[in-house]
Length: 280
Image (cartoon, rainbow, N blue to C red; front, side):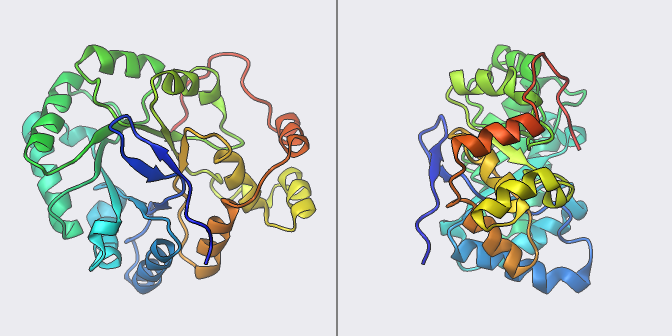
């Protein structure tokens, strides 16, 4: 059995795995349903007990896949879902949360995120989150796709209880390193990295492949290990094949050397100025 998955601590004091299970695009094709459920179950078996989903993914279909995967083991899972900005008014957030809970087959979410900024005032969404928290429907809340100024506004909107910010972060999308990541670290706020190996492009990048060859691993594992090198970053890659799930788990044990990191910095330079937050 592999070593336990390393954890990081949320501001609330809860320890969560730094390597979780993403579910974007799951639930879109019933023909893949069984494979998706099996992949999530294997990931849980391997200690990747943080599962990230959203009401937007397959219009709730992803949450239904997760429901089947976590059946009988809900208490061992740190469950994350997201509310769309179009549903982020006080009343709509309450309804959206109830709908997600029903699809997930659970009575609570461990973490509920605002998927991105919309037209609803942040203070209203925060109030809805706090109401859900007081009712035990969610245990913690956070945001996604928030840039530095959004995080500042959130703090001004009585959002001090925010637990994480889920953002795009990988070797080819390093903009957060200039300001957003340092801001989060200063606040003791872990960031959650989605698409940590890109949209498939990083898995075949020859520059990463050279580093991978030295370690006898895949380029995808190097890209994922690179994201997880930072103690305040949680990675949530998606995998639907057993070998992919196992490769992701093995990436956690890959130790990149200073020479590896320098080579990757040369190939994918860190930002030297403020960059607009990327989203996909």
